[in-house]
Length: 101
Image (cartoon, rainbow, N blue to C red):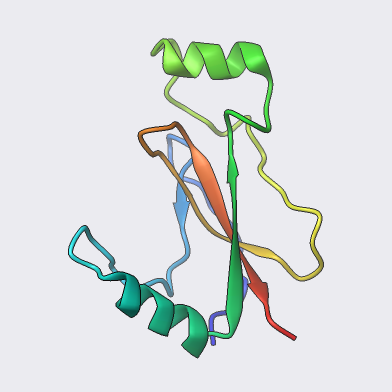
């Protein structure tokens, strides 16, 4: 089962848990769901756009900044840990794993 690791972000503030599979656009929802169930976790996603300073978010979308490190995503859920901080079409987001009890 996947476990928390120290989050070391790259020069743009992104992070990928080293135990995550190398998914790509060809990954099926079934493959993803199999992984989630095998690791006995639920997933929560937090977007920078909905959880951080509006001025910074505006600067991000205007291309004025390309380092999202100032954004420190979190969820108020016991035992949750970060799987990814990555950029999407909708801006940076963080995906948290929450171990199922």
